[in-house]
Image (cartoon, rainbow, N blue to C red; front, side, top):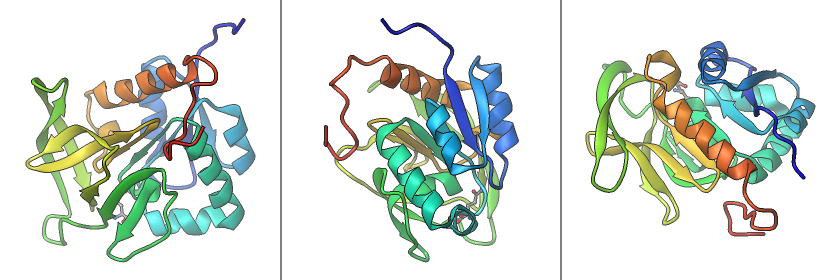
Length: 211
Ligand code: GLN
Protein backbone atom coordinates (compact mmCIF):
# COMPACT_ATOMS: atom_id res chain seq x y z
CA UNK A 1 0.00 0.00 0.00
CA UNK A 2 1.15 3.50 -0.83
CA UNK A 3 1.82 5.46 2.34
CA UNK A 4 0.76 9.08 2.45
CA UNK A 5 3.36 11.81 2.40
CA UNK A 6 3.31 15.46 1.41
CA UNK A 7 4.15 16.14 -2.21
CA UNK A 8 7.61 17.36 -3.01
CA UNK A 9 7.56 19.96 -5.74
CA UNK A 10 10.72 21.14 -7.49
CA UNK A 11 11.28 24.66 -8.76
CA UNK A 12 13.91 24.92 -11.48
CA UNK A 13 16.37 27.34 -9.92
CA UNK A 14 18.85 28.13 -12.69
CA UNK A 15 17.73 31.76 -13.18
CA UNK A 16 14.66 33.96 -12.90
CA UNK A 17 12.18 34.45 -10.09
CA UNK A 18 12.18 30.93 -8.69
CA UNK A 19 12.02 32.09 -5.08
CA UNK A 20 8.57 33.66 -5.47
CA UNK A 21 7.30 30.27 -6.70
CA UNK A 22 8.95 28.54 -3.73
CA UNK A 23 7.17 30.85 -1.29
CA UNK A 24 3.80 30.43 -3.00
CA UNK A 25 4.03 26.61 -3.10
CA UNK A 26 5.10 26.46 0.55
CA UNK A 27 2.24 28.76 1.49
CA UNK A 28 -0.06 26.17 -0.13
CA UNK A 29 1.46 23.33 1.91
CA UNK A 30 3.89 21.73 -0.56
CA UNK A 31 7.41 20.72 0.32
CA UNK A 32 9.73 22.52 -2.13
CA UNK A 33 13.10 21.55 -3.57
CA UNK A 34 15.08 24.13 -5.53
CA UNK A 35 16.38 22.14 -8.51
CA UNK A 36 19.86 23.13 -9.63
CA UNK A 37 21.18 19.78 -10.84
CA UNK A 38 19.51 17.34 -13.29
CA UNK A 39 19.69 14.40 -10.84
CA UNK A 40 17.47 16.31 -8.37
CA UNK A 41 14.59 15.72 -10.82
CA UNK A 42 14.51 12.12 -9.55
CA UNK A 43 13.46 13.36 -6.09
CA UNK A 44 10.30 15.32 -6.94
CA UNK A 45 6.61 14.71 -7.73
CA UNK A 46 6.14 17.81 -9.89
CA UNK A 47 8.12 20.75 -11.25
CA UNK A 48 7.67 24.49 -11.80
CA UNK A 49 9.74 26.10 -14.55
CA UNK A 50 9.76 29.82 -13.73
CA UNK A 51 10.01 32.91 -15.92
CA UNK A 52 13.32 34.37 -16.98
CA UNK A 53 14.81 34.15 -20.43
CA UNK A 54 14.03 30.96 -22.30
CA UNK A 55 17.18 31.06 -24.50
CA UNK A 56 19.32 31.43 -21.36
CA UNK A 57 17.53 28.45 -19.78
CA UNK A 58 18.49 26.35 -22.78
CA UNK A 59 22.14 27.42 -22.46
CA UNK A 60 22.25 26.81 -18.71
CA UNK A 61 20.59 23.39 -19.03
CA UNK A 62 23.06 22.15 -21.60
CA UNK A 63 22.35 19.11 -23.76
CA UNK A 64 22.32 16.53 -20.96
CA UNK A 65 20.16 18.72 -18.68
CA UNK A 66 17.73 19.35 -21.54
CA UNK A 67 17.36 15.62 -22.28
CA UNK A 68 16.83 14.77 -18.60
CA UNK A 69 14.23 17.54 -18.28
CA UNK A 70 12.50 16.35 -21.45
CA UNK A 71 12.14 12.87 -19.99
CA UNK A 72 10.84 14.33 -16.70
CA UNK A 73 8.12 16.46 -18.34
CA UNK A 74 6.97 13.48 -20.39
CA UNK A 75 6.08 11.52 -17.26
CA UNK A 76 5.59 13.98 -14.37
CA UNK A 77 3.40 17.07 -13.75
CA UNK A 78 5.08 20.29 -14.82
CA UNK A 79 3.99 23.93 -14.77
CA UNK A 80 5.83 26.51 -16.85
CA UNK A 81 5.30 30.26 -16.42
CA UNK A 82 6.31 32.73 -19.13
CA UNK A 83 9.81 31.57 -20.21
CA UNK A 84 8.87 28.22 -18.65
CA UNK A 85 5.76 28.07 -20.87
CA UNK A 86 7.98 28.78 -23.88
CA UNK A 87 10.27 25.87 -22.93
CA UNK A 88 7.31 23.47 -22.63
CA UNK A 89 5.78 24.30 -26.03
CA UNK A 90 5.83 22.10 -29.12
CA UNK A 91 6.58 25.08 -31.32
CA UNK A 92 8.26 28.43 -30.56
CA UNK A 93 8.18 31.50 -32.83
CA UNK A 94 10.04 34.85 -32.88
CA UNK A 95 12.63 33.38 -33.14
CA UNK A 96 12.04 29.67 -33.34
CA UNK A 97 13.99 27.67 -30.74
CA UNK A 98 14.12 24.18 -29.26
CA UNK A 99 11.29 23.19 -26.93
CA UNK A 100 10.52 20.27 -24.64
CA UNK A 101 7.45 19.38 -26.72
CA UNK A 102 5.30 18.75 -23.63
CA UNK A 103 2.27 20.78 -24.68
CA UNK A 104 0.80 21.08 -28.16
CA UNK A 105 0.83 24.86 -28.60
CA UNK A 106 2.64 27.38 -30.77
CA UNK A 107 3.91 30.24 -28.63
CA UNK A 108 5.30 33.58 -29.85
CA UNK A 109 8.02 35.14 -27.70
CA UNK A 110 7.90 38.82 -26.69
CA UNK A 111 4.53 39.10 -28.39
CA UNK A 112 3.35 42.36 -26.79
CA UNK A 113 6.08 44.48 -28.40
CA UNK A 114 8.49 46.88 -26.75
CA UNK A 115 6.04 49.69 -25.96
CA UNK A 116 4.05 47.69 -23.46
CA UNK A 117 6.50 44.99 -22.58
CA UNK A 118 5.18 44.74 -19.01
CA UNK A 119 1.65 45.22 -17.74
CA UNK A 120 -0.82 44.19 -15.06
CA UNK A 121 -4.19 43.17 -16.51
CA UNK A 122 -7.37 41.57 -15.35
CA UNK A 123 -8.09 38.25 -16.99
CA UNK A 124 -10.59 35.47 -16.36
CA UNK A 125 -9.98 32.18 -14.65
CA UNK A 126 -12.36 29.64 -16.20
CA UNK A 127 -14.01 27.73 -13.36
CA UNK A 128 -16.33 25.66 -15.57
CA UNK A 129 -17.85 25.87 -19.05
CA UNK A 130 -20.29 28.50 -17.80
CA UNK A 131 -18.45 30.27 -15.01
CA UNK A 132 -15.35 32.42 -14.80
CA UNK A 133 -13.78 34.62 -12.16
CA UNK A 134 -11.60 37.73 -12.57
CA UNK A 135 -7.94 37.33 -11.70
CA UNK A 136 -4.93 39.70 -11.75
CA UNK A 137 -2.24 38.83 -14.28
CA UNK A 138 1.30 40.25 -14.36
CA UNK A 139 2.81 40.10 -17.87
CA UNK A 140 6.56 40.70 -18.31
CA UNK A 141 7.93 40.57 -21.88
CA UNK A 142 5.30 37.89 -22.23
CA UNK A 143 4.70 35.42 -25.02
CA UNK A 144 1.32 34.74 -26.66
CA UNK A 145 -0.16 31.35 -27.39
CA UNK A 146 -0.98 31.44 -31.11
CA UNK A 147 -2.17 27.90 -31.72
CA UNK A 148 -3.86 25.34 -29.46
CA UNK A 149 -3.66 21.65 -30.29
CA UNK A 150 -6.87 19.58 -30.04
CA UNK A 151 -5.92 18.09 -26.64
CA UNK A 152 -5.19 21.44 -25.02
CA UNK A 153 -7.65 22.82 -22.48
CA UNK A 154 -7.86 26.58 -21.79
CA UNK A 155 -7.88 27.38 -18.06
CA UNK A 156 -7.69 31.20 -18.23
CA UNK A 157 -8.03 33.98 -20.78
CA UNK A 158 -7.03 37.62 -21.12
CA UNK A 159 -9.19 39.38 -23.69
CA UNK A 160 -9.50 36.80 -26.43
CA UNK A 161 -6.10 35.21 -25.71
CA UNK A 162 -5.66 31.89 -23.89
CA UNK A 163 -3.12 32.58 -21.11
CA UNK A 164 -3.25 29.43 -18.94
CA UNK A 165 -3.49 26.09 -20.72
CA UNK A 166 -3.26 22.44 -19.78
CA UNK A 167 -2.64 19.21 -21.62
CA UNK A 168 -2.63 16.02 -19.55
CA UNK A 169 -0.16 16.60 -16.73
CA UNK A 170 1.40 19.75 -18.19
CA UNK A 171 0.31 23.34 -17.48
CA UNK A 172 1.58 26.60 -18.93
CA UNK A 173 0.86 30.26 -18.10
CA UNK A 174 2.10 33.21 -20.18
CA UNK A 175 2.06 35.55 -17.16
CA UNK A 176 3.54 35.43 -13.63
CA UNK A 177 0.97 34.12 -11.10
CA UNK A 178 3.70 34.03 -8.42
CA UNK A 179 3.77 37.87 -8.46
CA UNK A 180 0.09 38.33 -7.51
CA UNK A 181 -1.52 37.57 -4.16
CA UNK A 182 -4.09 35.24 -5.77
CA UNK A 183 -3.03 31.64 -5.11
CA UNK A 184 -5.54 29.90 -7.40
CA UNK A 185 -3.26 29.15 -10.37
CA UNK A 186 -0.64 27.43 -8.20
CA UNK A 187 -3.51 25.75 -6.36
CA UNK A 188 -4.74 24.31 -9.67
CA UNK A 189 -1.23 23.02 -10.41
CA UNK A 190 -0.98 21.31 -7.01
CA UNK A 191 -4.41 19.71 -7.59
CA UNK A 192 -3.17 18.43 -10.93
CA UNK A 193 -0.05 16.99 -9.22
CA UNK A 194 -2.21 15.32 -6.57
CA UNK A 195 -4.53 13.80 -9.19
CA UNK A 196 -1.61 12.56 -11.25
CA UNK A 197 0.31 11.08 -8.34
CA UNK A 198 -2.78 9.37 -6.87
CA UNK A 199 -4.10 7.96 -10.13
CA UNK A 200 -4.64 4.23 -10.32
CA UNK A 201 -1.55 2.37 -11.52
CA UNK A 202 -1.40 1.37 -15.21
CA UNK A 203 -3.71 4.14 -16.34
CA UNK A 204 -0.79 6.51 -16.82
CA UNK A 205 -0.52 7.97 -20.27
CA UNK A 206 1.92 10.55 -21.35
CA UNK A 207 0.86 13.60 -23.33
CA UNK A 208 1.40 11.84 -26.63
CA UNK A 209 -1.09 9.15 -25.73
CA UNK A 210 1.64 6.59 -25.15
CA UNK A 211 1.21 4.24 -22.23
N1 GLN B 1 10.79 37.19 -22.98
C1 GLN B 1 11.24 36.01 -22.29
C2 GLN B 1 11.57 34.89 -23.30
O1 GLN B 1 11.29 35.00 -24.46
C3 GLN B 1 10.21 35.53 -21.28
C4 GLN B 1 9.98 36.60 -20.24
C5 GLN B 1 9.56 36.11 -18.88
O2 GLN B 1 9.76 34.93 -18.53
N2 GLN B 1 9.06 37.00 -18.08
O3 GLN B 1 12.12 33.92 -22.92
